[in-house]
Amino acid sequence: MAFLSFALILFGLVALCGGMLWFIITAFRTSVLWGICVCLFTPAWIRFAWRHWDVASQPFFVTLVGLALSFGGAQLMPKDAPPMMAGMALPFQSDKAVKESKKKPELPAMLAAQKEMELKIKLTALSRKETVLRDRKAAIDPHDQPAVTALQEEIIKYNAELQPLLAEMKARGMQADGRPPFTTAAAGDPAGTAR
Image 1 (cartoon, rainbow, N blue to C red):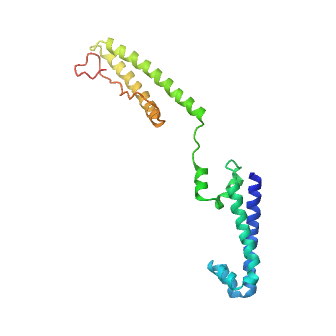
Image 2: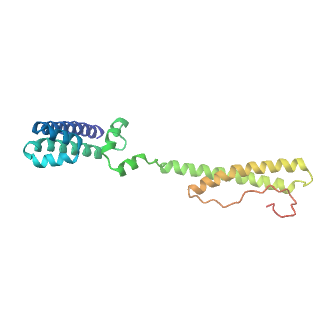
Image 3: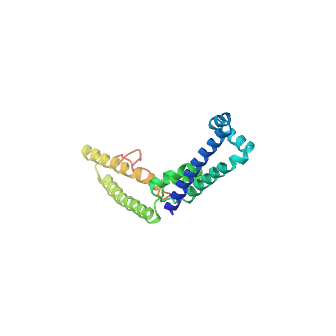
């Protein structure tokens, strides 16, 4: 199908260019002034074809046939055509077809489901890590400053892993449990910020 579309576009362009050249030569044969006007002003084409239909009809129809073949070939061009062939069709396609060809392809359903499962597995692993961190936080002596500092650093790393994961799940429309970041306060916190 791509080859047929390419052949139609190519043949249409040849007919279009040939018809236009024939039209310009016909205008110059009528008079030099008509030839110059047809070359420089687009509306002069219509005026010349109207006034000198007897000599301008054949090149006019060849030009229209070439235009129709080019547009028809562009509309028949499949989306998975080789880049060279698809590139020839772009000037003759509608804006909607051009925008559709530039859209970012979506993941197939199988890959999307696989990605969602990977995100759920990562969330489960982070939930286990959170449980371990909470247990360590509950068992830690608040006066053991090196242990508190080490735990706080691990909680910060945990939150740095959790936030992008939750953001990606939200972007995919997945159900996240809406968990806030784990706090870095030490056990026995009088302010009650520890969870």
